[in-house]
Length: 286
Ligand code: PAF
Image (cartoon, rainbow, N blue to C red; front, top):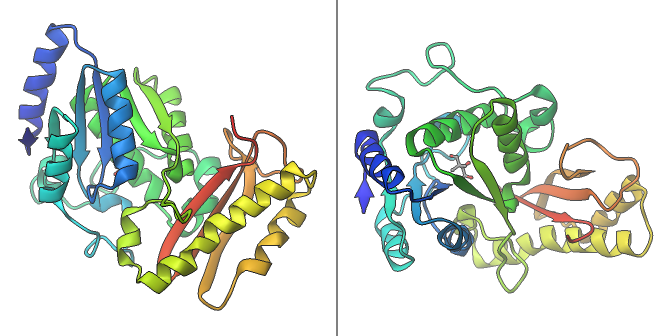
């Protein structure tokens, strides 16, 4: 069922809660791919009812980012959601989410600001304000849907960590479920932004997963110095790659590490054909 209005969603949720049913939320910006489908599948296994939100959230995009061209594929998304037995697809307008004619800024709207320590690094460093926008919309979705569980992909590792921190700090009574990255056979992590890449660009983009896999191999062979591990990336890069960051940090706290350990995660952001791609890997798989 496709719903655009908050009140309509709330009506179904209240009915389900009265019946004692559990609710799972899969927040998305649409352009659904197999990565999203894995979240929906996990939500279906875990909960009685599943809500997918499909909303390209304007307040998490910077002024020079891809908000206008971000793929919007609601009809195809609906088809996938119907096939997978999603109960509600919630696709609000920006006016519905933030108020008619509302200026989208923290001068006039209440924003959720995650702690500086968690956002002054990795993606947050170049995308200033991005995680404020993410946390604000996610908390709004949590309040609208009031799910028991919410499902996020590990692909956006910093996002999941920041959301878990928000849930803990603000006592939000929702269990966050993190699901593994889904990759193409080639190793490329699935992302809605892969749609911007040419076939040649997709080949060049394989460098991200190759660099991460190589770091993991080197770590498991005994190299723990993070500078040495990061240096192994240079052998893979060509003039087709514009590296933004490659970091090895604690997988729960995002603290920098001089020496990698079994709790470390390596994260990369790199532009290919001017498309900003991210990926990450746990150095020791759980
Ligand atoms: O990961 C995303 O697609 C978005 O950041 C999210 C969590 C749906 C919030 O808009």
